[in-house]
Image 1: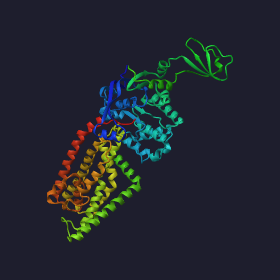
Image 2: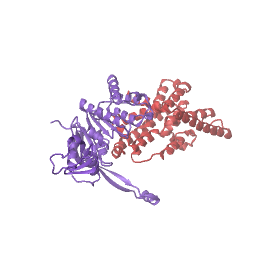
Image 3: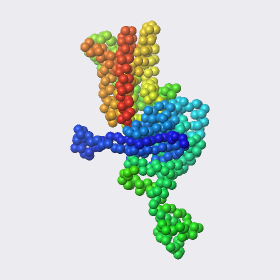
Image 4: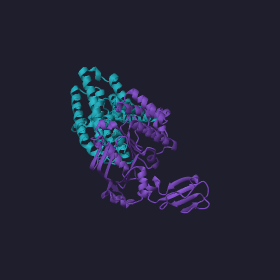
Length: 322
Length: 258
């Protein structure tokens, strides 16, 4: 079995922060006695990712998923534990050969020069990553066509819409064809059709080039559309690692089905509870088949079976222990 | 090539805001005129035809040149780096297979290029620097390059305090004052009493006062070598600070924001 392209073993990271008291007296007090507190952002996380995998990192705000990405990309050093990419590369050392093989898109941090057109930044990246001119031209034409931003290549970044900027940020992260792509909130500010476009493009890229993709997002659509595997981070701990369906089946414990029909059911079948005119609930604990004519059903959903519902439930809980 | 492109982009970014560039030049011109009128008044009222060996017309040229140099030797990298640390955008820079300092140097060069061209043209066409023999010309060129590199390293070393200071804007007036007083922007340091002669070898004076005197042809070859030695010394000090502080800073960097 090939060794994983990313290995995180018992990684821990904490940082010191300062709290400020309110009001003038608080500010005066803080001038002489600052109150420090240590935040454990990542706690004993182990994670292994194979080449070609698409891993989604899920977590609430401040859960530690972006910090984990920062540990994997070498922006931050681990306090204890070990993080290695490509078997032997320690990210924090930032060796050029390592940086050449990763692409990072932090949606709230821009690679683009604000006053210049995206093409100027991309040409600079071409030189930084030593990309041959012909290969650069072909690849850039492909990327801009796929993401529908070719006409914007010569427009100053400050004149672009948020969605167009995000797409160019993605192009910047991909311009050197990295082996591992880190995407932090890649679809913030992007309309639904562009989101679908990005999902399709990234899926195709992963399929064609076996590019490993690590993705964080609050948008569960991103994760469901792209990730073959998800890791759920909560209060710095990894609380789940598996497929999205595995996550749903593990946490959607109540076998309550929500059914929508094309017209009211008359008479009401046994075990079926009517919620409104065409909306019904069935407790499937003891059933082996649906007591409703399948031709009448518009949709069947398991109650608490959507990723959003599960994550809402998980993130509202206190820090769990492994 | 990648660094040259950085320089080119920085120059284009400077030229992109034409209004800012013109305003910057206008503000500097007003400052220079005020200082010139002040000094001409000093000459008139003192009844002297030269002060510290500098005649009124030379003083006018001195003040113009030293203010152009103040534009070249800007402290902007401090505030740019502080912005990168504060916003967390340094993360993006760190993820590129480049040397941040070399890239930053070429960026600095690009932003100062319009003013460097003015200084270069003045040196080439007006100044006697390149008409005093090959050795003098080479020595002068070396001093200019050494001083430029030294000042950049010094400013970059100061910028590393951004890792621990959330706001570095209080440094802006301090640095302006240092260039004004220690750099000879307001007056040539030669007018100071002999007890303060050692001040002419501080980094700001090397960048302002000494390079202006060089353009005016007021430095002997020995003085050029001495200034070059000091510039090299300061560069080594700044480099040492960078080597020590950068690894510590980068460990304390939190990459704030997502």
